[in-house]
Image (cartoon, rainbow, N blue to C red; front, side):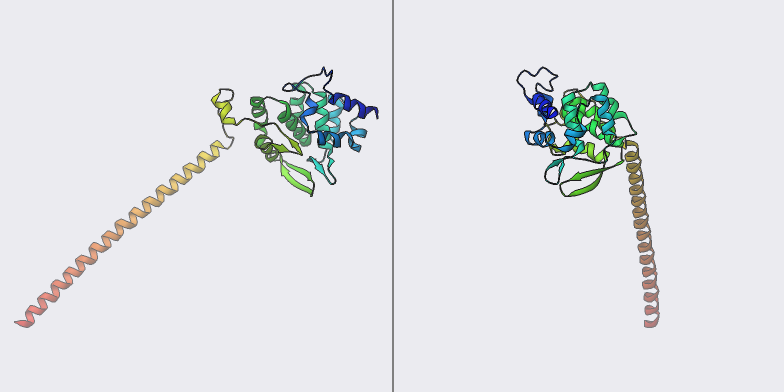
Length: 247
């Protein structure tokens, strides 16, 4: 009960003196209905008690799937730990350490989710876009069961969707707008070299096709000219034979 009371106290904006995210209590970034389900859940009461940034990392490496709610709207451990991170609001350096740890993919996914919730727009793009080249599989739990996804797909959802893991995300400005404001450099796709090679191969194939078409047209014209000349010589021989018979 003390743990639940502590959670409720952190959600009370009256007299809140902790760190603010975009001018508000970080815990209120989650919808009230979701917050209530989290603080009433067994996992929250048993596994999230007295966690700090270091011990939360130990819990995160034990995760085996991502997701928001399942069954009768029960929150997943992933969502409970994300909410606990919002309460703790650790330093950005700690979150980046979580994110860059390649050994634990669910820890990386949790850190990416927190980045999308709390970082500024330009920082979100700069921090999450490099993870689009991480193609490792993730298990996702939904209300209908389990499914498979990939880290790059999860990151793409965070960058393009307004609701992920049963959580409404604040509207992220389009990347092009931030580029126009000189807050971001133009993104260079890691597949750029491969795309250039494919384009070059396509252009070469089209050039070969055009060359073959022209060769076919030329040979067709030459064949036509030969047949016309043969027809002319044939008519000439028939004309001579007719004149001989008349004489």
